[in-house]
Image (cartoon, rainbow, N blue to C red; front, top):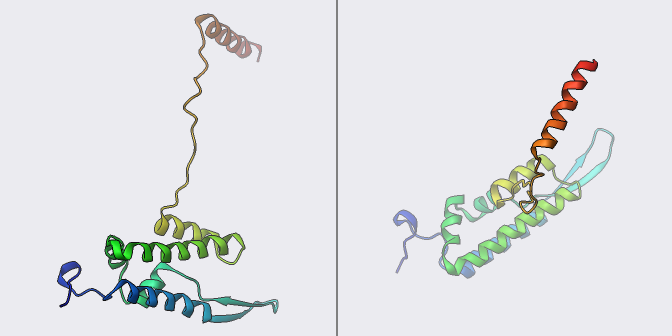
Length: 149
């Protein structure tokens, strides 16, 4: 019996174990792919194929939307969460060590993993309260400063 997926299409994987094996094969494939780059100054650098969400999708033969649909299924959720965490960790660590472009990493982490820029505001502190006398003093000083110039 074929279980149908989104839109009546058959699922790309018959079991969570099948998906797990294919995901492990993707990461092994990336680890094995090495490229040697020689800079203008003659420096030699060997880099591995990076882990990416789009690369994972291509290797699995599915789209990002399909990954999202699988992530909603209990039996696949943990497998995909771990795979996404591995891609996220790769991006974070390699950016911090200077191996990846920080601008692209920021883009990727925000768009693929929900990272955000945050400004924390302390809402426990109360703004300074000025009374009428304080306001007159401040305004009086400003008026005198303008006259002195």
